[in-house]
Length: 361
Ligand SMILES: C[S@@+](CC[C@H](N)C(=O)[O-])C[C@H]1O[C@@H](n2cnc3c(N)ncnc32)[C@H](O)[C@@H]1O
Image (cartoon, rainbow, N blue to C red):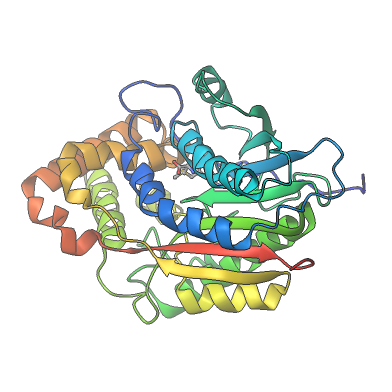
């Protein structure tokens, strides 16, 4: 193995572990709906693009799948079944190739609660499992060893807050680029360009020639990056809760100024440009997914979902007690203004991106 540098993020970019009432495992139904809405597309794309002569190099006839940013479950199990089923169908229809064994690698940051994930593996699964801990912005597998790479609602997490934002303090008074100054947005976009480029480079090395990749990514429609969206509303309410905590004397303004959310939401044209610049993949499809209404979650459900996803970051920066209070305030604000749950605000875009590693037709 070549000497590789692993850049494990020290920040708590992972989800709330365990299977308690505020865990990600119990508050990720919305993310599951994204997988459900992509189900037909994945089946079609696999049928169209999978070359079952691959892996020719593999005498064990094993089809290897990696789910990048798998979290704790149970969504990742659903995602994996949704890949295995059309792959199997394709082999069975061919009558020539023996159906392979399946091996699934679950990837997430080392701080992810892999214990809960492995405790809850479906008992009737028909695949072998292994963990692949580490940042998906690094290389995680040997060259040409993976047949199918998958990632859902994970690539909006940048590897870090852009250096410029911290060095120049340009996002003081805001916890994110949405609704902020142009230069802050540009710094986030540059960080995304670097990170997504690293993700594509690593996967290009790890996938077999003709290997497939399906991504579900949160984004904005082209030209829509500054319109009022659910994500922006969510972040502005969180910010106002932090401001309330400053007024209450529980945290300092400086502490809030030094807090930024490490998320970026690209547009379709940004994604296309980055994939084309990388040059290792053919684009099978980029499509927008229809999304279920978040308003169905109600104020409590939405607060729990956001807390399960972002809570660890708040705990890391402000401590547990403050984080708890922030999310209580957040819930109060949603209860006071339930109009904020209206579907029109929460229709942000999820892109389904299907790619094929160049090298074999
Ligand atoms: C919102 S969850 C999505 C989980 C799952 N894919 C689903 O659909 O429910 C995002 C996941 O990405 C993981 N993640 C964030 N940055 C990562 C990185 N650099 N490398 C690996 N995983 C990362 C987080 O730890 C988290 O588990």
